[in-house]
Image (cartoon, rainbow, N blue to C red; front, side, top):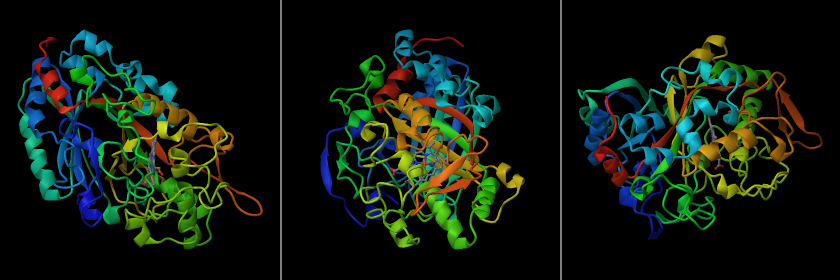
Length: 459
Ligand code: HEM
């Protein structure tokens, strides 16, 4: 269902200052509810074949025009650095991409703190091999439209010489629109200036478009550096993909070990994230879940932390408060608006089972392709991993890490502020383990055609 329908009609409009029909739909269009789709990873061994896929796909790739209403099914296409090389992109253009993008996510493991269980050595194939060149994603609101879009995409690449499918991974919402750890997600998103509609209640002031789309002024008043020539960079953005395996057994064992009743268990689950499983924010309903509030996009993000400076409702170290501290006074000052990301994550695999506590449940394929977009995605990801996920200093929490996506060490704790004394919960483990990752460039539609027209490279 498109956003306008979910909000019960037409939305307050704002002037459009972005070239929406040249920007890929994924940048602005929210993930449908419910959602279905597939990620398709392609390898290119002949540059002409690779360029031909892009040329054929271009007319079918969804644009962000009227993104808040209409058809909620679209095809997106993104390219890795090795993919740019494989399709014969001219050298000066290749050199104009940021260094972290050119190196790729696996090579940036140190900067991303991807050590231990998250080390690229343990990633699933084909991640970290440099072989993922083109990444096609189909997003849809119905199974029928998903299959139709899949067929359209398939017709564009199948049978082309020098192009092969490395991996196809279906995704979708679990029953009740929950993710593999049993929570509603995809709620908190930044409002983007010039996108055409007013911010939703609680989204805060719209962020300058240049933070998310190349070619427009960012928060500092000037556009961020973009790849050359302009036709390649403009209206594009960067995507970071991180494939997580959710260790449902370990997560449930942790909850059960630290709660005496189902109520306590659910409260602890809410404290870890900052929202009840239904999506209702703890700030607004600290004592009990309110599923109606969780389901209402006009209310479920409408809060600040002004009345909760010490984290008595939403722990300072909870996932959501770390990832977007909003108006929290932090021990280390940071401009929150410079670290916002657009999230288009997709859940995959078996549904969450609240009773699964075995080690085997940790290995049942299920988890999240965490997908984030930003004009400086690589720098933002490295900042978040270093400062807000795998450290607690910015919230005066010492070495404590994000309880949801932090890489935990022996003896890890999670602090729940309480009167008269805080409660330290022990037994935190790495509940979501990284199993792959890739940096991609998501070109504008003109840029996609430009890439398809280049002549370089050889098979
Ligand atoms: C398996 C991995 C993950 C799971 C299960 C997960 C789950 C969640 C949930 C349940 C929420 C609250 C609902 C919502 O606002 O959408 C949330 C919010 C959020 N998460 Fe995650 N997340 C994961 C990974 C990540 C990572 C790796 C990052 C950043 C690097 C991240 C950044 C955010 C942000 C920015 C928000 C919104 C905060 C806000 O605006 O208030 N998440 N996540």
